[in-house]
Image (cartoon, rainbow, N blue to C red; front, side):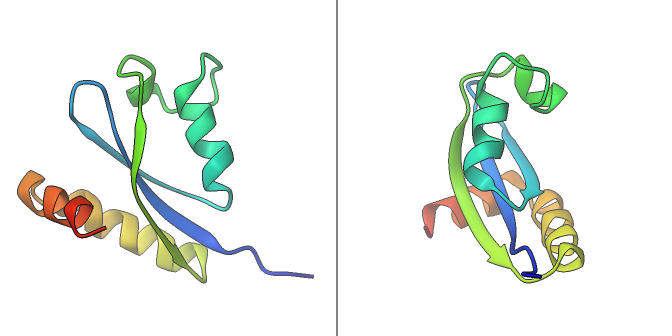
Length: 86
């Protein structure tokens, strides 16, 4: 059995805010956030369209959750620098 590779992603919403999450399938997850179905996060539903601005991979779900938490704790300026570096 192949172990899933986890991704930590950040979206920029239409109101210029950021949304950070984790997934094993970034392409599918971004489509869910961007579409009209109920699978996207409640936060992004009223802030469409969304654009993927940051993506990084880690090996475990635990590592993804830790990295997500670290990104969410960054200041807006630090998040902008993270996005700019890509």
